[in-house]
Each structure stands twice: as C-alpha cells, then as structure tokens.
Image (cartoon, rainbow, N blue to C red; front, side, top):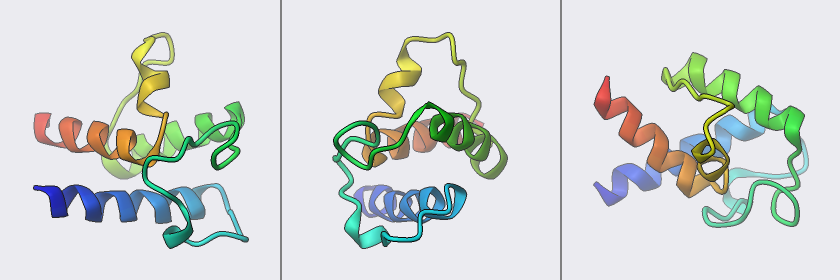
Amino acid sequence: MVSDLTSLETELKEFIISTLALEDITASEIESEAPLFGTGLGLDSVDALELGVGLQKRFGVKLDPKDDSTRQHFRSVRSLAQLVSERRTAI
C-alpha cells in the first residue's frame, strides 16, 4: 500500500508538471510534503482550478470548491495522493 501511494505521488508530480506546463522543475525536485501554494511550489488559485479540472478528467476525482476540506487536499502532493487513493477506492 505504501509503495502504491509513493508511485501515485510520483504520478501526481508528473501530472502537476504537465498540467501546469512547469518547465524548470522535475518530479524528483518536488517534495511530497512541501506546500503546493505559497512558499512551496508557488502555485496560485488559477493553478488550483486547472489541477481540479485535471484531477477530474484523469483520475475521476470530483472536488467541491465550497467544501472547506478541498483546501486541505491541495496542501501537498501527499495529501492529493491520499485523496485520489481514497476516491479511486470508493468508485
């Protein structure tokens, strides 16, 4: 299960890079626990919207922007991986 989560984290890092067309960073340079916004990867609200749409298309994960927990899911790659893992299992 841990290796599944680790491979999902790697997949999500590559997904973030390709979805947001980040050119100056590789998946191995993104720390799983680093914040995605602000001082971490430096993403903004437009990036969050693009990632949300991409997550729905690629992984079938729907997010409610009005739900307070959505912000927590976007905290880091690890929290996104946990969300995708839980929601995939629920399908």
